[in-house]
Image (cartoon, rainbow, N blue to C red; front, side, top):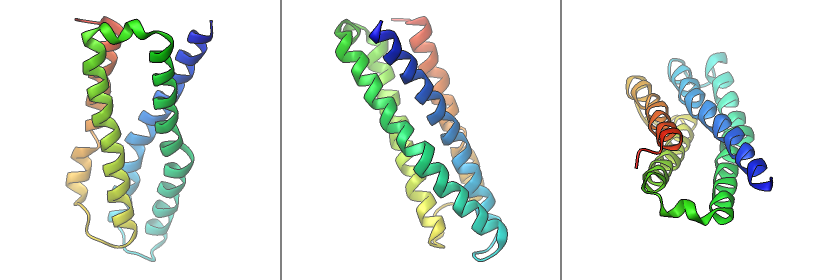
Length: 142
C-alpha cells in the first residue's frame, strides 16, 4: 500500500514538473519580447522566478525522491530494459531543467542567452521526452 502512495506522489510531481517545464520557457519568451524595466519584462521575470522556486525546483527534487523510493521499494524494476531507457531520458529532462534555469537567469541579468525562436523550439523538447517516457512506462516495450 505504501508503494502505491509513493507512486501516486511521484506521478503528481511529474505532472507538476512537466507543467512548469512547458510554461517557464514561455515566460522567458515573453520577457525577451520586452526591455528591462518595462512592465511585461518585470512581470515575466517575477513570474518565472516564482514558478522556478515554488513549483519547478521542488517538483524536480520530489520526482527524484519518490522515483528513487519506488526503485528502493521494488528493486525488481531495475532488471527491465525499458526502465534503463526511461532513467536516461529522465536524466536528460533533468539536465534540460538545469539548462532552462541557467538561460532564465542569464535573461534576467540582461544577457543575450538565447533567441526567442530557439527558446520556442527548445520548449517542445520536454513534451517530446515526456511522450517517450510515458510510452516506456505504460507499454513496457522491452
